[in-house]
Image (cartoon, rainbow, N blue to C red; front, side, top):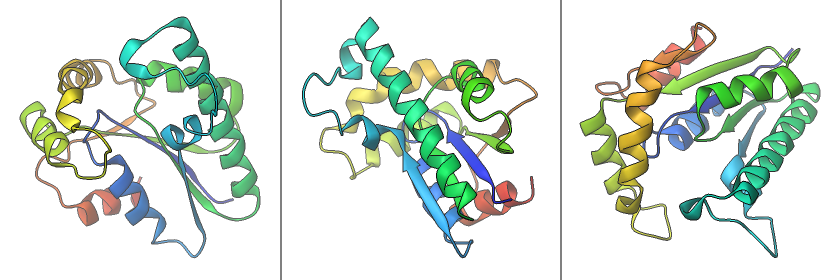
Length: 172
């Protein structure tokens, strides 16, 4: 059975870059970006900068949709990466309800805080100034470092290349 990987970490940790590089190592690779699924909402999108109950509901819908897509492509022989910045406990809960028998490999990319902030600010893939996410990085990075369960592979990517990180993931 092909693998499903869930790659999380704070903004700027390298999730998307690592996901694409990881999937390039497989003959069939499918990348599910939860943030992209959220953009499919045509009317009434609840943005994460002003978090409400509706924001939580819409994130949950997108995460459940990502899990469904991942399982569909996994059954078709694709290696799948779900790429999403979310707390580890929420993803554990989602796994129990939607990905229990999928052989999910959960990876948290976690450079040290200073490196994480630097990477976040240097991103040029956003339609906004990524520095506005610094407050999220400052909150998520330490909390992810303090709360990983034995169900997560936390990888310190501070001094690792993307290729070295992918090699570590493949060795799990």
